[in-house]
Amino acid sequence: MSRAHRYYVPSQVWHLTHRCHDGTFLLRDARDRDEWCNWMQEACRRYGLCVLDYIVTSNHIHALIEDRGAGEMSRSMQLVAGQVGQRYNRRRSRSGPFWKDRYHATAVESGRHLVSCLLYIDMNMVRAGVVDRPSEWDHSGFHEIRGRVSRIALIDRKRLSALLGFTSEGDLRDAHIAWHDSSMADRARQRDKVWSSAFAVGSRSFVQEFQQRLGGRGLRCDAMIGEDYSALHGRFHKPADPV
Image (cartoon, rainbow, N blue to C red; front, side, top):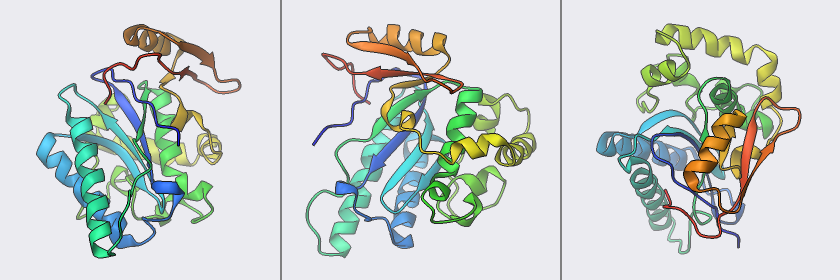
C-alpha cells in the first residue's frame, strides 16, 4: 500500500484528506460522522485548531485548516483519528485499522485558490451523487459558513472571512451564496485529483516559493492545464519534517 506524503511548512492553509481503510464505508452512519465532528471540536478547544471548512463523507473526510505553527494540526489529527477509530472498533467489536495510513496534506494559497478548495469540499457529496445540493448533507461546514447555528461549531468564520478579504461574516455568507450560484460550483462538481495528490496549490509564484522552502529536492512544479492554478507534485528523496 502506498503511503500518503506530507511535507510541513508552518503557518499555511492546508487541505487535508483522510480515507477509511481500504475505502470501506466506516463513516456511513450519522453517529460515526458525529463522532468525528465531536472530536474535531475537542481538538479546537484543546489545541486551538483553526478549521475553515470540512466535510465528513461515508468513507473519507476533507478538512481545510489554517496551521499557525504551534503543532496544533498534527496533534489534532492524531487525536481525532485515534479516538474515532478506537471508539468505532470498541462499539462494534472490530479489530484492525480504521484509517488508510496517513492523511494527505496540500498547502493552499489564499484568495481564489482558497475559494476553489472551499467549493470543492462543499460539493463532495454532490459529486458522489448522494445529494443534489450541498445543503442536503449535514456533516459539513457549508451550513456554518452560511451562518446556521449548530451544536457542533467548528468553523472559524471570522478568520475565513479575513483570509478571503471580507470585513464581515455577512459578506462571507453573501459571497458563499454567489459562488455556489456561479459556474465555479459547476467546476467543483468534477473530481480533481489535485486536491488529494498535490503538495501545494496556488499561483505559480506561491508553489515555487513553497518548493524553495521545502528544499526542492525531487519536486517539480506543474501547471494544471485549463485551470486557474498551478500545483506542486512529486516526492522528496528524504522527507522534510512531517505534519
